[in-house]
Amino acid sequence: MASINTSSLRKHHGYGNTTLALMLQVKCVLVDPASSANIIRSRVVEQLSLQDQILPTAQMVNGFNMASETIKGKIMLPVNVAGTIQETKFHMIEGDMRYNALLERPWIYNMRAVPSMFHQILKFPTPEGVKTVYGE
Image 1: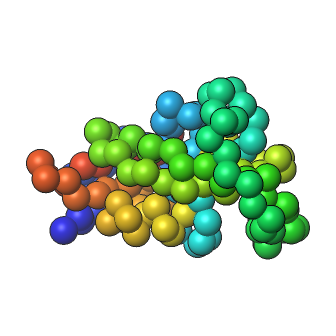
Image 2: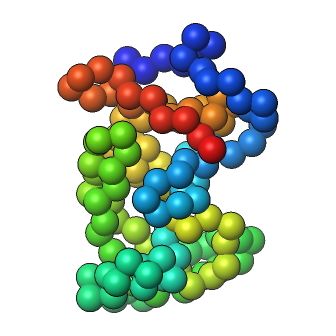
């Protein structure tokens, strides 16, 4: 069981009512438990030279950036967080957004993770015990 208490926190002057953003190899990744699809910017896929792994799709994402956005394709990527790797399906968009990728409910559920926007941490169980990742 992952629990969050003050002894597990780093000093963070801004914790409170902000989003939880984690810095991964793809920098500026937002963990958002309120949404239902993992999103990645097409520019990031191009920078990683992974265009050959894109699967075509004809779908729309509704409500993203307060508008509908056409999905340019889907891609499966390994997401490594603190040594735990989860194959994750991302919907690729060209739209402008503050983060390079969004990890949503499917990823959080599969990781059995507990995100805390208030504490700016993400906790999840591993065979070695509970891992904690701190937001930036």
